[in-house]
Each structure stands twice: as C-alpha cells, then as structure tokens.
Length: 114
Image 1 (cartoon, helix red, strand yellow):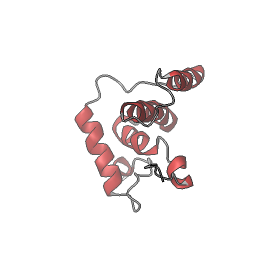
Image 2: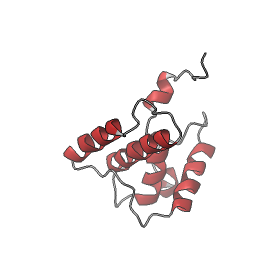
Image 3: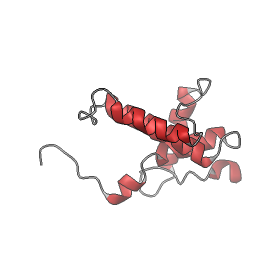
C-alpha cells in the first residue's frame, strides 16, 4: 500500500552484505570482512539516500551518525578511491549470480578460496 514495499527480515539482515561481500572479494586479505561490511553499510545508506529512500533524513544526519559509530571502532567508512567502480559492480553482479535467492553472495570470498 502507498507504493511502499514490505521489507522482509531476511532482507533487513542482509543490509550491507551484498556490497560487503563484493568488497571482500576484491580487497581480501588487505581488508577483513568487518571492514568491508562497514564500508558497505555506509555505501548502501548513501545509495538509499540518492534513490530517495531516506526522505526522513534529508540532511544525512542519520548517515553521519552511523559513520561516527563505525569510526569509533576504527572501521573504514569509505571505499578506497583506487578501487574501480567497474570492478565493484562486476563483483556485485557475480555475487548475485551465484546466490540462490538473488539477494547477494555469502561474502566468504568463494572465488579466491577455490
């Protein structure tokens, strides 16, 4: 109703996991799973803002608060500038292609462990 899509618990629990898994595939072993997930959470929040899903946060106050919380644990909040956007996109597509539910990969870096 009202054009809003119901968010399942599974989808909510996967917050950050699709981009995080792709980042882990590209950055491991230089960055660990938690570091990749931290960057992914911030990236997905920014994407949600740009796409209009965070209308209640027009000044990005919530996003800034999340970034501050992650930084308190010395976690990165920005994707490295030298990481190719094309490589990240390809890794996300690859994660989704190998996922049974189409939501994203498991983030365990299957490609490098094979």
